[in-house]
Amino acid sequence: MIVLSIIRDCLDALLHPSARYDALTRARHRAFMAPRLLGSLVALAAFPIYLAMRGAPTALEVAAFAWLIAPILLSWFLSRTGRYEGAHILSALALAGLVMIVAITTGGIESFAAVWLIVVPLEAALSASRRVVAFASALALSCAALLIALGHFHFLPVPDSNAALHSVLMGVGVASATLYAAGLAVSAESLARTSVALLYVEEDRYRLLARNMSDVISRHNRNGAVEFISPAAEAMLGASGPRLTGHGLFDRVHVVDRPAYLTALSDAARGSEQRVEFRLRRDAVRGQNISADFIWVEMRCRPLEQDSPEAEVVAVMRDVTDRKVQEQALELARTAAEQADASKTRFLATMSHELRTPLNAIIGFSEMIVHEEAMMIDAARRKEYAQLINDSGQHLLSVVNGILDISKMETGNFEISPEPFAPRAALLHCCNLLALKARDNGVDVITRAAEDLPVMNGDPRAFKQIALNLVANAIKFTERGGSVTVSAEVEGARLMLCVTDTGVGIAAEDLARIGDPFFQAGKTYQRKHEGTGLGLSIVKGLVALHNGEMNVQSTVGEGTTVTVALPLDFAPTLSPSNNIATLKPALRPESQDQVHQVKKRAQAN
Image 1 (cartoon, rainbow, N blue to C red):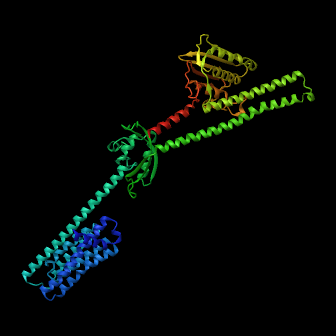
Image 2 (image 1 turned 45 degrees about the vertical axis):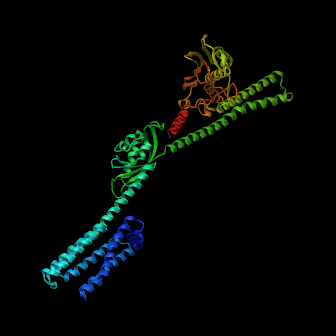
Image 3 (image 1 turned 135 degrees about the vertical axis):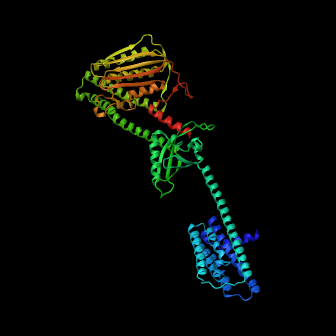
């Protein structure tokens, strides 16, 4: 073993740099140089013994032994250039040339050396090159044909007629050729064993990568069916590889995303690299609290062979559900920011008018009262101006209170104090307060509240504010000669408060935004009615604080119906700091759905 190790180290020192970093190439170069160097050195070492036994050599014998230097030169050529196929071709030429020189002088095709022509293609087989094997085979056949032709036409010298010597030389030739062929066989077996070992190493390496990669690698045929899929698919989709082969993976693609999936595979089969995102159904995973759901996957695919039309496709799939959830969260945040910016713009546009008008009245009439002597204002006019100042101040106070209420609701700090109260009395009181305003606008207010309405538990102040805002809003947007109907009845465990008017109505595109702060249906320059757009926003918030529901139905030109459902026995969630309930208003339905979807996907991952 020590001798073999020393020999291997010496051979490795002679290797060309291009063969030192690949195990198979290194083994092939070593198998080429070892028998040639050792054989030539043994033959040269035996030359003095041959001389002692033979005596003075003939010219042929000197030429044959001189030719043994060729393998050493070939090994030097491979060591310096690294051209493995070229070295094998030169080796075939050198061996065939030596065999021809000896055979021509010792009997032609009947010479003991002619059998060595068989070794020429055998030696070339170690090159693992069809071109080299074909060349060596053609060379050996040509040499054999040449020897036969020369013998047939008597162009060869007359060989020694000593039959005994001829038999000995023939035996030596066959034995030496057999031993050399055996060495070639051992080298071929060693190379094969090295190739298999390296193959196992590469298989283990790729198997290790496939098992530990989170990305899924798959191979598809031209029809898109899966022919191979890596073990990572089971961790990603909760299904074993055999269940995903064929069209098992396609069956899991979301129906909406299947055209994009198939198009990407088809385009990749035609030679272009593709990237596509789609949804895959994932099975429930036992013991990991993961339910069946769809996950987002990014797939990059390319042809397995670039130059082959309609080739197979190799694809790499990666779970990008977390990124999708983040993108959706960013989109929700962006939408919320845009809505906040739009609310600010609406606030400034609305408040600039709602605040400036009463302030101008207050300042103007107060200045007139200050200069009453110069303007000769009598007592009746002064009283009228004072009333206008008071009305303007009350309007400003209501606007500020509305803004404060909305701010408290949005921050979750609006406080309600539930207590038992009679809803019918509170509703009649609100309608009586607005009767004068309705009469001035030429609008009839009809109240339909059963006398046997039960006592309900809630915040009476909030209930009155809901009723006042709904009725006042209906009166404001109802033309002269119209009517407003206020009704209250009990359905199950809820009180149904319904306010119906015959006013201008609300367009379908504006219904979804009814209840947003500072929003009024219709564009600002088209509105005939003043207002901040806070009325229904406050109603919506108060209803949500009572765990109720608000529904708006409207037809342009026919009127609007607002229905509020409030629980008869409201049980608030108490704040840890005091006994007053503090609740946050409900989100818009579409926002709730979006948030629920994002949370569900985040929990699933």
